[in-house]
Amino acid sequence: MAEEPVVAKLLEGNRSYVASDWDPADRELASPPALKLAVVACMDTRHNVEKVLGLKHGDAKVIRNAGNLLDDGALRSLVVAVHLLGVRHIAILGHTKCGMTLVGQGEFRIAKSIAKTTTTPLADAMRPDFQRWLGGFADPSDNVRRSVQLVANHPFMPKDLEVIGLLYDNENGQVAVVRP
Image 1 (tube, rainbow, N blue to C red):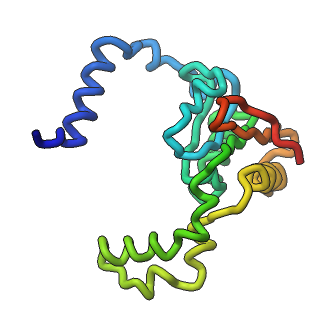
Image 2 (tube, rainbow, N blue to C red):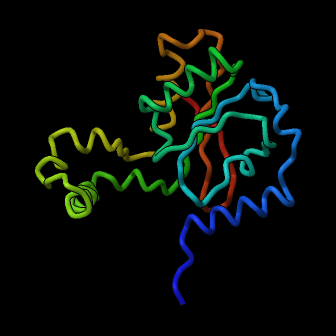
């Protein structure tokens, strides 16, 4: 049997959502999240940020990317969240067993895949700053600490902004505060 096209699965999921879960009150959710919170988390599929942190829909702005890294996109989203959407608390949520700890060992495999599946030659994919651009790190807790410091000391962030470091344990589902 042929695999169902992804777009068909997504549209069917949306029809189901609209029929049973969509709440018209969502249209009226306040622009500032209810808890005035933004969470930067990893895109890892092993955890649902809202469930892990006990958040309800509308409580927080959730920004996800590989390794919960504070790249230009994440920082831009935080600046908008703070200065336009009323966010006053930022949580950086890392997790154990993060795949970004393997980037240093897998960068050649990533570059080969880029060269094989795009028009980018391998030499261009392996430019000298490729690993830095990918953003791998050795220790998830240290990555959270660095991110907390970066946000807390960013020139576009208010000095009274609360920035919290958290680490989710993939083994037991618990979250711990990451201290500076």
